[in-house]
Amino acid sequence: ELKVEQNPLFLSMQEGKNYTIYCNYSTTSDRLYWYRQDPGKSLESLFVLLSNGAVKQEGRLMASLDTKARLSTLHITAAVHDLSATYFCAVGKDDKIIFGKGTRLHILP
Amino acid sequence: DVKVTQSSRYLVKRTGEKVFLECVQDMDHENMFWYRQDPGLGLRLIYFSYDVKMKEKGDIPEGYSVSREKKERFSLILESASTNQTSMYLCASSFSNSNQPQHFGDGTRLSIL
Image 1 (tube, each protein chain N blue to C red):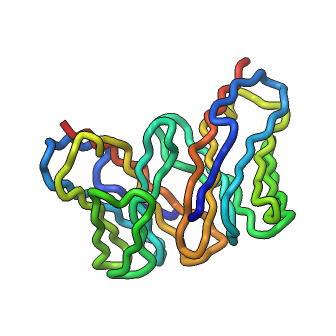
Image 2 (cartoon, chains in turn yellow, purple):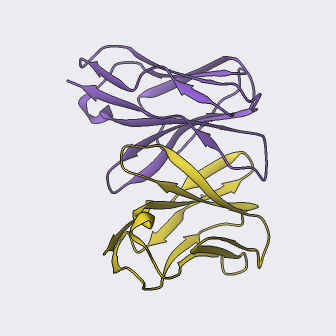
């Protein structure tokens, strides 16, 4: 059974600091997604990672994938208040896509 | 622009009622999904469909059924609504086995009284 675990589930950090969100999954998968959700809004796609060693970057966010360890990371560099949101990883296997519980990120000015 | 449209943003129903949540996508996606989102639990997959008239159970199908008579429409049915089905329901769609992400609707906040 495919299970996805994120940690931490809640993160409060100062502006300007760096931090990493971790996403572990239980079985082999052919793709991994990161999404952002703002309060009261739907989910917005950030990254799609397809292969071992894949790394993608957009602004202050960088995502990577290690398929052997079944681990993806979302790294935040020099955080700014606008990055406050809930971040979800999701793992795809065949046509099924399973989400982690999300990491609620709160960035303090 | 891609669009996943859910029929209602907010819905209030009574215990025991049969409830229909509708979702329509205009992207010719093969796959469609229903999730519920609850605080601290993330998104949990209820059902998904990979083709017309095809459906697969997700992790929490109990108390729900689905219907996909046309490619663009995927309905979630609460056969006899109960208070523990009060939640935010999110519909999503995607191409089959694709390297493209799912596209989500705006969600339906359902309250069962």
